[in-house]
Image (cartoon, rainbow, N blue to C red; front, side, top):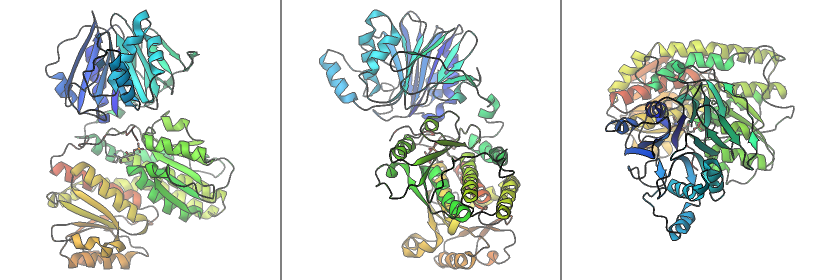
Length: 598
Ligand code: M6R
């Protein structure tokens, strides 16, 4: 998982490449590098973040180049293993996002032909292969021939000595072309290019692209020309930048009222006028498949679908689904992924189709890989999310799941017109409920600050708030590095209570619904072990003060909808813990925004 950039124009390539690379840093940041075509191919790379690359980087002349920011998969994060990589003749330079699965056998065969390797990476084999094929001076053909020997996933970009072009290819790793005037661009993600253009062409699997300053040509795997109209991306550059917040994560948390609003826009009104996400088939069950935060959204979705549509729903981690036995029934399979590029989830989508299931993807990124793998797409419309920790994409995934449940419930006639109206009314109120939480950010910061030194933390909830406890734990561990565990509150007594002490704060989500009495009992169990309790409770709960040490009060709304405001409060909780501990909030160690390896 890495970010790649390419540029061909009449401006100096170096500053443009570095600028675009910075916008891709969320994809990986353990080393970086660039190659610019001038008399030869000038390569500069270094270990560490892009700021480390800039320190000591010589000025490079040339108007064509490629660049890379790396998240190591094959070979340690060192300058030698940083991209671009070259063959032994130094004639070409290659950047790559993905994994060449047959690289060991290719490396052996190339070594026996006399090629010498200078890195531990899988990518270097491709540089040697292209160089070996490049004799006739046609770079695109050389890349196509080299690709025939490669198995695996990739977005490659290649430059060659004396050529004013960038050649690129894609298989299962994101790649987009940006069209400018007298200049053209390539990148792993549209956000890298928005400063320069909003006219984009998505490259598809198997395609090879040639980019010069005034032309872009695409051929398919068979070498036939491909014509694809550019899309105009509505995201502004400002959308993709921090907008005055200290971190993208905080900006994205505060964007949630608008994101929910956009997500609902035009989708709920009269039953007849609503956007439909399904064909006419009826489904007797739903299987939700996802990873990480998207999986937690799926867990909440299970409660929503079962409640509104009366259909049983199961949830499975993508990387497990693939290897599980096919169910006897024919469920609707819902793939949830903010990026649309998570390889585990894409593989699951393919498996679902192989099993003959109808598939729906809930996804944020327009035109991302998963959208081509499923029967229907529900876009979450959260806008670009740059912080590695998913926030607004999680909340809008929940919105999409409510919308899907409404459609399923309406189709199965489980949801009466009156019940539907009431659900729609509750959804319309969510932006305001979230804004109320955001208005309490300072209170949440003050409480979080008291627990900044905790090593472990438990999060408990019941029913629909149990997956919210899981998501709060994931957010907390991901960005503050405090070990967090999310549990169904009734489950602590079956083991985890052994870990509680005065140094183990417990965050309890307490809803004034049918779970309330039991939840209070669970909190008492916790207090009896001297653990401090922070309750996220309803503002009309007059009893909770007797049981909790700290309370974050939220306006009471029906439990089916309260996961949305509750998670916003706990996103702020995780954010302020991380801030107090001085953590690199937008780029936590060891993880990346988009995980394109299995
Ligand atoms: O793009 P996806 O939603 O498929 O990503 C899945 C996970 O990698 C992602 O949710 C991850 O857990 C987040 N960084 C958590 O904040």
